[in-house]
Image 1 (tube, rainbow, N blue to C red):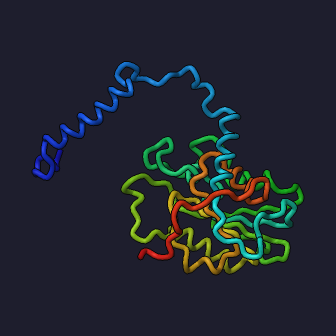
Image 2: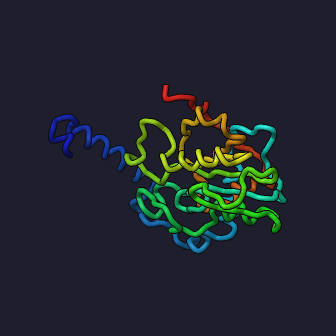
Image 3: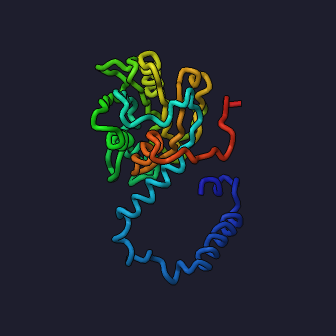
Length: 244
């Protein structure tokens, strides 16, 4: 409306756009049947649906680095040290447009976090220590230890997600610096809806996995990290090295 009042957009151009939208809606029959069919609504979120979603998560993971074939990890590994807020937050996994417009952090949807998926995947003898800030009481530098940093962006939609740097948030970078210093072997799992610039940090990591936004089924990430499913995902475009 403000653009039209300033003369930047004509009323005729707005009318044309509205007519196009209405034409499509008429063609789809939305005015004859404006409401969704509810007969199958009880199946939404069923075990079958969740298994399908878990499979989709596993098939979407992209392996970007894997020095010395560190991945997949053995399920009977001695110690796992897991850091990063995204490891245990369903709404970070789901991103924006989840319950709320911009999304938010916390367990506002049912599901399984990546941490919970990992805990269920490893052997009963494996010691799993989680600290979202990457501060551990055990020894992540031990010979039988592997660290997994699950980091990414907080949920966003539209303007709030605009970025001039495509870098990880400062808090996530702090987690990575702590774990890089303390860990003998470090796997980084990125949880984000877009590529992020990691060029300078990549040499410090033994493995890098792009998990995108896995939604409610974080166990699908664990399925691939521990070899129940292979890495199948491929990048649709080259991963950017810089903002250039």
